[in-house]
Image (cartoon, rainbow, N blue to C red; front, side, top):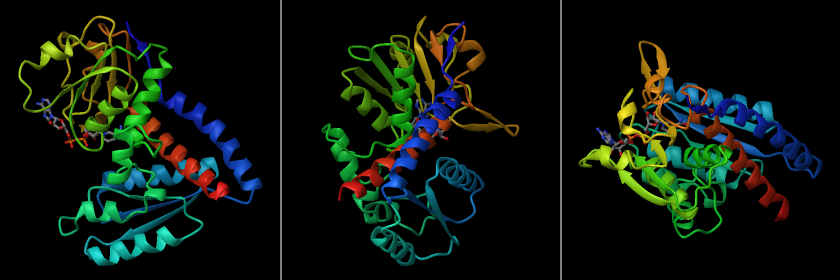
Length: 282
Ligand code: NAD
């Protein structure tokens, strides 16, 4: 059966070397700093914010969380971002999504200084990624790329099929692989004959949000399968891929949990450190 791509292990390897980088930055008088803004009390969001905070602590990154009630006005939220943009101790700003309906998400993302946009969601960051300029890469897509690299398979020229086209996962992950010279196909909710595409994938990336959506019959023998999905079924976490079935067909596969999730946070830490290095240089 398939090689397991262990995201947890890869993440902790990376975090060990990040600790050393943070130490070196501190010796130069700069401690990387991340600010996370959480609006409301969505339990999943609260869990993500806690994990990010803990990961910062373990790596030596200064972290601040700002918790706001779901009644907060857009103006007040923007005011917090303005302050963080000016704060020299903060290298990265992240607003945990989704936001309550009365707040315009686009306006909030656009208020974050592109210099501190460690989520990589600002239109300037997205545009730079699109044209291949250096910028903050979005964390989940970047984590996916790192995991595929870890398998040692050559990405250039391969057929990458992405299921899902959200702005935070599907679209950017396809773009990153295109930048690595892959041939990229996007499938989504309107795609016809989807299996025809997925069956041809050398690398299949699944970001749909439906438990066990991808079955063994959808996958080519020996393909690399990356499961981005995080679903809760009967209190347990599972991905979008029917792991037990697909692992018998795939060449390599990520588990859920312990796959893409830990890598996402690791790439966030990496972006924060990258931003702090720019502060050292300035
Ligand atoms: P989303 O709901 O914004 O997008 C889902 C995409 O799936 C859409 O583009 C849609 O076209 C496509 N889709 C829906 N039904 C489909 C169908 N029947 N056939 C084909 N395509 C279909 O979700 P998202 O924000 O991109 O997240 C996707 C999943 O990844 C979720 O489970 C989410 O929790 C998870 N996620 C994980 C991480 C991580 O760190 N591991 C980060 C972000 C999101």
